[in-house]
Image 1 (cartoon, rainbow, N blue to C red):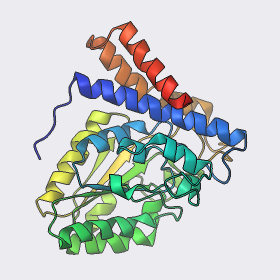
Image 2: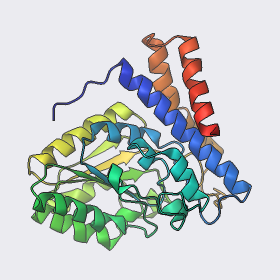
Image 3: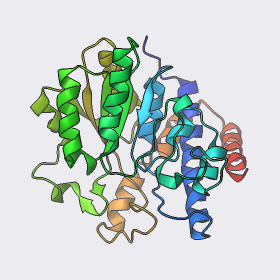
Image 4: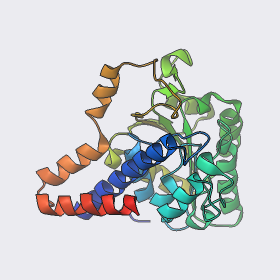
Length: 300
């Protein structure tokens, strides 16, 4: 498909979407503290630009699959956020009829295939979705997300081998937020440039600024178009940061407040809003209207 331009309307949508995702996660955290959500809870705060840019690059029929930090991805693809919240609270009206909970959101009719609690377990499944599209002669692409810890699993290497052998239409997106639970990238392996793990399979690979939705969009679009043409997969290391702990039970003793503050200064929502203001794409009143609309939607 022709590449979509990034316009005023794009930025306004990104701002509203990312703000809603952030507030949705904040509400989820509050309900967890009230014990209305049980089990584990992994929040997406700080990583919103990855999803905003990726979703903008997708076309109808494309697929997305990820790990357990998966509450807002189906919302980005068109799922009703009330169904996501219902799933978090264990209600039968949830996306998995209340049986999946926080780590197992599914919305296949929107192209979202989970939500997987096993670290790295979604990687071969993403390749399987891509294989199905290839086998059936479709020109769709599967975006397969994993963390910086998951790509150290054997499932990545096995999948990368077959994906390149069969030239599967899949884009592997590593959301490198710096830590696998509490283990930093520097303590995980003898190198920190994760994207280079594609080189051993002759897989095109690159690093991407994950705090910038435009950079993510450009990288995912180019990789997806390559896959649609039958040229196979790409590995993207999307460098981002999570503002909250690995889960709600994480005391975060492995990082300093100064480190978190450094990345909060690069908050994708704030940067998006700053761009809107610099370009005079919205007045203060119009921005306030967006903020109120998000607040009202979260409160429903």
